[in-house]
Image (tube, rainbow, N blue to C red; front, side, top):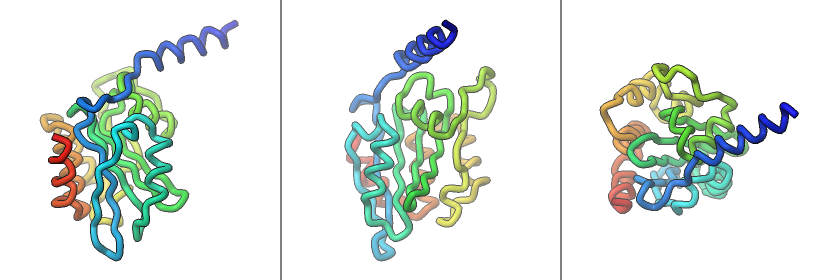
Length: 177
């Protein structure tokens, strides 16, 4: 009997989670290098709602060292996903966004983390060294994400700058505006 109650609670939690609509998505883009040249392409809005679909899409890209995606939703949170072969690394800038948004919920499920009860805790979760080989250390990523006064799209573009995709990423982000 308790199992039925638990599954009903999970369904209610999932009902509170929303898919991001076109107006909610600040941007969603893929980043990869082809023959050493940075390439940034816009992605379909639907990929901003399903981590598995986003990972599958990134796995098909030709990147020299895998492919990444940056997604910013409603200025509230961003996600960074990096796929290198079968290795998948993800970062979510605000774990509390999983209470409202499907992509964030997918990411915390993927990471196997829970939303903390105390909302005073730092909301950053994931593989913080996912871009270390591209010049963005774990400490630098944490410093970027610690700027709570900035919108998530600005923070995600700072990451693009640090991993040397800045100009291309800004062009794609501007196209979403």
